[in-house]
Length: 176
Image (tube, rainbow, N blue to C red; front, top):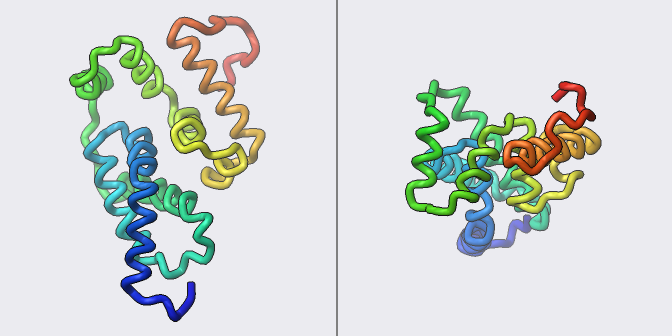
């Protein structure tokens, strides 16, 4: 970042990034946390951290991935700092579905939230945020082959949960 850029210009640049990427960051945080309130907190803390280190961001083209990484780390920090109350998944589903009446959407959400984090997170990064397999691997610290396997298994688990997949059709041998 140029030393000649004014604080006001830097603030405007950062505000533009926030306006552009905040909806994606919130969706990602929501899929990580399964809570709208917690997702809002995670995004707020992540954006605060991002602003504090914004001057260190060298490549503006990588700002989205940089922000996603900060959200992911901030989500992990929340669990390090405090013990959160657990929520019964049935009650959680009712909370989300309170304003929605589409039963297919409710079934899909229930199936997504029942996926293990190891499957749900790569799927959310790909489907919600449009990351490539290589980008997902970089964010999660996984080889591309592992990311591909997890994406494939996540989709198969969703198909099975929704009743449209091969049930007991061999293949994985129970090594999920």
